[in-house]
Image (cartoon, rainbow, N blue to C red; front, side):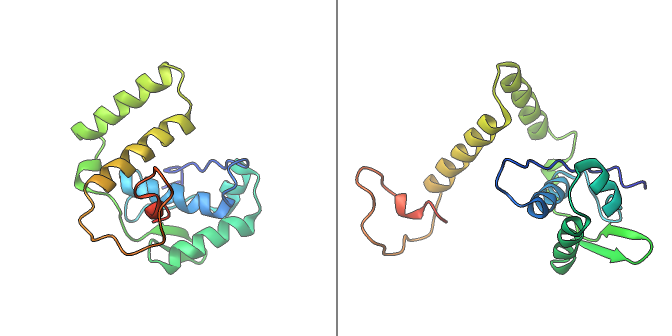
Length: 155
C-alpha cells in the first residue's frame, strides 16, 4: 500500500497541536474503517510534503499512537496499523452511515460550515448523554444558576 489511505489536513487556526490533529484523524479513520489493520500510514516525508509541518511533529504523533498500540513503527518499512477502532455499523454500506452522509451533504448544501455541523452533533451527543446518564451525580459545588448539570460539562 502506498500510504494514501489517509490524507492528513492540519488546521493551524484550531489551537489544537498538529501532532494531536494527526492522532485524531488517524483514530477517526480507524473508527470509520477507512484504515484497517495492516494498512501503512503515509511516511513522515509524505505528511510533511502535504501539510508543511515539521517531521518531528509527525514522528511524535506516530510514536504516541505506537505507545497506545494503534500502530507499529517498522524501521525501514514504515508505520502500520495494528488495531482497529471500527464498530460493525461503521462500514461504508451501513444504513446509519448513509443517513449521516446524506444529512451532512444537505447541511453543507444549506451553507453550514464544518464547525457548525460539528457543534450541532456535539450538542446532540451532550443532550443524549445527559438524558441517558445512569451514573449517580457526584456531589459538587453549587451549579451555575439556571443551568442544571453545568457542573458536569467538563466530563
